[in-house]
Length: 326
Image 1 (cartoon, rainbow, N blue to C red):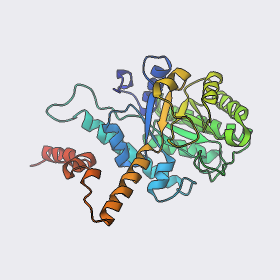
Image 2 (image 1 turned 90 degrees about the vertical axis):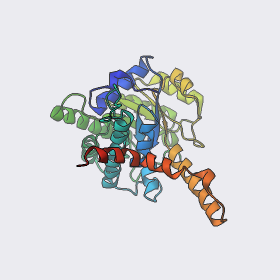
Image 3 (image 1 turned 180 degrees about the horizontal axis):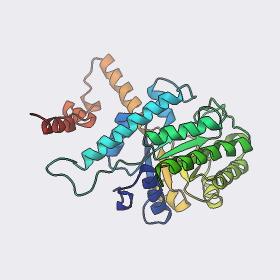
Image 4 (image 1 turned 120 degrees about the horizontal axis):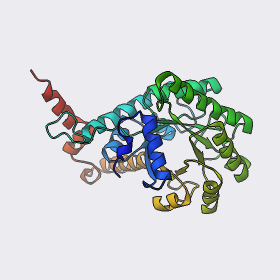
């Protein structure tokens, strides 16, 4: 994928909005969101040439040594968002070779990121504070969901959701915060709101659809019906709910894994890959640890030292350092 010129020279939320509009109009392919959870994974996604990403709460929790059961706090999620923003900014400058002799004619563009806001970390006022916090961190969007706190991963047992009216009010609070932020700092600066429902597992498919419809009426920019269990459910959701929609492509989860082109034809605007990077890294670490335990070499499992240094930023750092030598 290449970054469309329509995303140049605007705040991250407006950049995301333009990308969504380009996909919905058929001018661009479905927006692929490999999910990151720290500065390194954000940097890797940015360097790989994707147009957007998503900061996954599962990943942030996992990187902190916890399951995705809302054991991490708002401040820990904010810290992760700041690290993600730095990683994306650094990748953008590096991709454009900004400040170098062979600098690209294309301006550096930090790809937009949607951040996981879980349940908002409290009541409706906490939800608004979460939106403002992510906006200040440079996030392009925020996901808010209708689970009872403490929430958990949408593909595991034990979920419960708040009543219909409370769920809508939670989304309304997030949308109000988006609008208030724009009133303070200008059009296009308020994070887009992705409203998620988990009620399919608890209250059935029809309730989940009605919640998504109500979330749209409350003003959300995007919807996410979590964990549909069949292609028929996915298609019906796309037919009955307006606006941009997210498909969650969790490998070995509850939802059928479909090719991006088929998802777009179905009516989805975004396809998130929430655990691919986390799961791949866990597998590689486990296999490497087994080799170490057996006294065997790990060369086939790892990058060269030079490649590792480059990915974490040593190459760019050396060039920057050279610019300011006396």
